[in-house]
Length: 319
Length: 128
Image 1 (cartoon, each protein chain N blue to C red):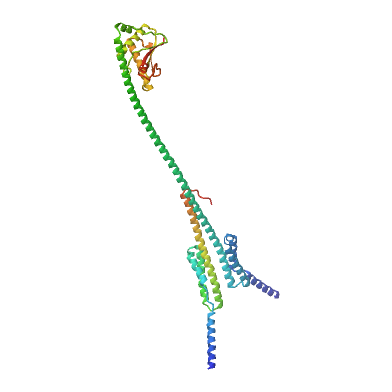
Image 2: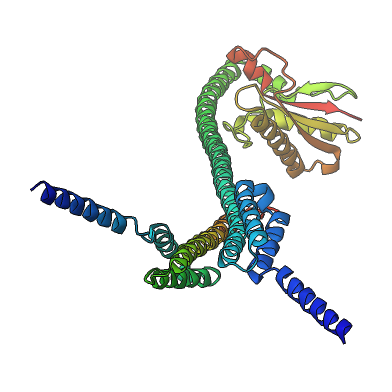
């Protein structure tokens, strides 16, 4: 019985001791809060605040050791808990501030990037506009050049037409003069000489050329003048007298006028002679008409007389 | 006459001692906690869920301290002082949480502004 009483007394003392050693809820919370804060970002971001919390917890612990059940120990633990939470809250604030600062910096960088891009776009646009303007100017200049060329060509054509007109007038005057001279010459011949001239035979030898002097045309045309009948009649007689002969009738001009127009005119005149002979009865396949233009002059084109000689019809005996 | 003067002197000394005794009575210093509560309210703690609880605790602590300070018990006055410290700690925490919430919102808005700006100008979003 006595030992039983001792046991009860010892148990009560142990129970009281164990009750006294259990920390208050405030102190438990303070310890947990400090542990959480010290393991979080507070240690790096707000070390001073964390240190304050540590000091507050140390004071609370001491107060608890001095008097575990005192209101002062509980209140100090309460305050230590709040200090730890405060450190954590300030760490969160610091993170937010850093994020805001970074975002603001990013915003400014983005604005700078936009300005840079805009400037580049503007520069590109200006370059394109400049190129476009230059291209338009080039096209416009090309248009002006083409127009100028056209005007020059027109002026050249007018000048050429004027020159051709003048040359044909000169030619006409020359032809008229020659005809008149021929007429005068023929008229001055005696009847005997005239008869001899009429009967002169044109010799057609293979490989030789014969100039039919006296074959004249209307100015700048392929129309035979009446005075050409004499020489053409002689040519006809020669062909009739040599039925096996084949000839090439070639037309020639002086160098007045364009080369192309002279080429065409010479051909048409040669064809006119050929047609005349065909109408008279010469077989067409015995004759070939060609235009030589101004390519084969036989005299100088510098003088009226030379040009008159160059304007001619030739027979070339091919066979 | 001389005796009367001595009595008056003694009375004056006694009166002065009484006045001095009244002046040494501990006065509750609520300034710090009251100021902390005002700062918390101005920072918008009452509208921030995580902060409003601590603001409420601070206010209650202040009221309890006031109530305790009216009692004559010296022990109660000490408890009132301690209660004021608790209220101050609560109020400061409420203000800090309120500011943290505002800073977090501001950061979110700043990040959103950047994102929107880049989107409006057809720029690639930066990696996080």
